[in-house]
Image (cartoon, rainbow, N blue to C red; front, side, top):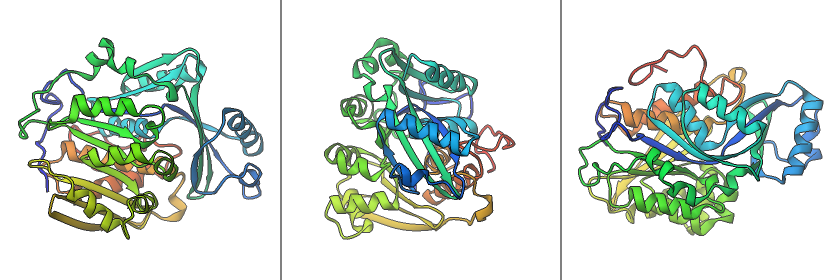
Length: 378
């Protein structure tokens, strides 16, 4: 159990000029297309029904053109794992959240920045004129989705930009929580997709904002290919992180990397190495509509629990894109705003948020969801 303080809108962190949650990730324009039953697009482009991958820009452009021509009615949304989480956090009522990333100086970049401005999401965005804004084509078939992305400008987000005075001022220099665990913590969240070519930024954030402080360092596994292709970097982030999110498939892959027989053994091994004072390491493995397995502990203390996810009728599921991202948002929102929540409270609330999002196209909450100054009644 952990006991973050109840925080009103007027008390946003130990320093009201500093964001409570700062996220780093890839910026994408999501183009969602619902596939027709007679469509052969997945086969023609050698894609899988429920998968995510990065593909070359020219192939992605052809895929987008064929999907729209064949199936029509594309829907456009801001995308990117951490950005999705920030947007859902903002929609839930968390005002003091900031997203950091990069876009190109193109029309898609302008569209994305305007949408984020309209959503009142605070951003720290680097614009790179020599690169195009990242794009993701989401091919939807029932509760399955094939995510195909080229991250474009996001691949070239610079450490020098993060270190610049402008960016540093937006992130904030407050370290008043550094040695007092009764202070309100700040959360630094880095998505797994962010790792390629930008691991130096991840380490900079950890070393300068989280190491030796009460601030939380949080990451998301995001995809098996990230774990397989950037194993050394991901292991470093996972071992440093106070909170690790991922789905069961990703954790099974990670268990094999660590040569563990099961996800339970993997979690026990990671938690045994975690020796921070007055804090537990938390590991959360989702398994679609089945259950959430979560682990927590510190050193020799180890706990494993399971939560059965409430059933969402199959006919109510519109788009599972961003379900995991919205789960993270719900968990962190409850964590930051709940009154002495347990892990089960946070997991339960996260599952309810994800259950609402999969009833919409794109990673969005229903527009009719009532706002709340503390924890919204999902």
